[in-house]
Image (tube, rainbow, N blue to C red):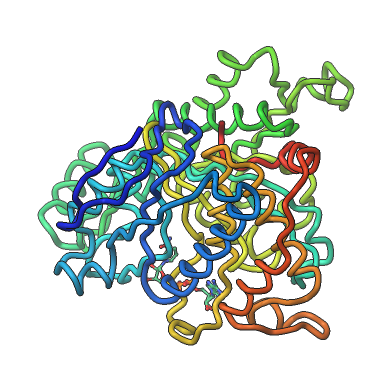
Length: 435
Ligand code: NAI
């Protein structure tokens, strides 16, 4: 379908709108993908990412397919051009095109504007934050067996303390809530700031459903619900209760509980079944490190998911390597999981892998598996040969430290068009987006 529209007063280029329905995209041929470069290191990793993806698309499809990248403004660039960090037209553009990519956006801590990322996730109801974490050979990790961790984290993206319902200490809202709490027998100090943590049955069920469907589609054998329900019974505990109920109702024929695994099946998971277990969040941090192989797919609430995905990324070699996506019913956004890295911004030394691998997730989402595998294989080869940006190379024995542009050049030079068999093998259990 070919459509044209004006954004920021400029006529959009010719190309396709990617149709997204029920969290799945129809395969396009010449999609237009809006791209928010982001702040700090955003522009340099965005440029590298587009170059790498364009090269893979050409390598795999010649001139029969192409992506037109469309600049979408948010963050510092939007303030400079339009006086607002998130212009309405940016939201309209993302809504119109359905599938987008973005670099990191800065958020002030304490006062100032609300996180643009959180604002967008809620605006578009991108309820499912999918973060696959795996090890790439060649990277030096702080743990002995980083290759043991291969987990896909489904983080609920719209609720929890991230809902942004906060009242400053001493404000009327805070004082009124303190008064209501008192009415119900709870004592809160008068000078407290108040944050509200909503966890709904609706959102809990849909993120657990997404995680289980992913496990079924990709041959993964364990889904772990992570929660802090021992302390926060009516929120985190309810998440667990609703998640288990959903699993029993909708997937009872496939899922095996940890209890039944031992009581009924003698500890051996029957062929074709998936283990559904649950862990308290603090224990999960310990087990991810010490019993890494026990995890495959995690479904969890927003804050737990945020912490766990960064810890898991650190385990396999750092934030610069872990990709992410935000999937909703009608649109999706693929973004680096790290921030703007202000300490190295503008130096041209940042690692583009997190954003580029998010681009791989985007390619998988639009069903361009050949290009996705082509990029992944080229990154694997580059890192295996110990060519990397400083964040990774400085830990490698005789690492070849390169800058962002040189790293992208090396990845492109390492590209090979994958065979059909390679693509099929690589996609088994790998695809990081629910299809
Ligand atoms: P950060 O992720 O920007 O940086 C943490 C550390 O990791 C720094 O040492 C940095 O140099 C390093 N690092 C991160 N990405 C790297 C890369 N690609 N290559 C090499 N090194 C990399 O976290 P920080 O400093 O807490 O946050 C900075 C800003 O980013 C804040 O305003 C924060 O709110 C924002 N942020 C935005 C996110 C997003 O847009 N999705 C996510 C996380 C933070």
